[in-house]
Length: 189
Image (tube, rainbow, N blue to C red; front, side, top):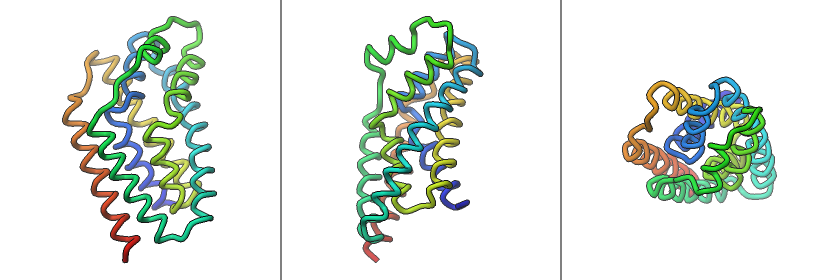
């Protein structure tokens, strides 16, 4: 369980760097207090990652381990390309992040849950859950995403500026390529 937790934390933390969710976290942090935004993000993350781990566990039970490793490796290479391309908020997501509401927790939860459906962090969590311990994957991926978004909240509130986007994208891309190659080699051996 512990190795799955550490691996999932690292992979999802890196995947979240420069992601549109971080942009949303910064936007929410500019408008609301940090704690309600972080609580909302945590609720949404726990929900999406529970779904992701459930899907990944079911898929993992149905496929041979070597096949899963190769598929996961290819998926991580695709995540690398997606990360290098970058993310941006569309008008609806920007509007949801900027809209004034009485309850920042509900607003952040709803916006983040919808933004994460089908996002690379959800897909990465599904991929990890096909091979790793479900509880470790759930806890690690949830903590990794919340930590990355907490960093964005901190940056959004204190600095009021974005992290250097290109450097983050390149670093995350390299990490995904390394994870992808290791998984492919592991599956082929």
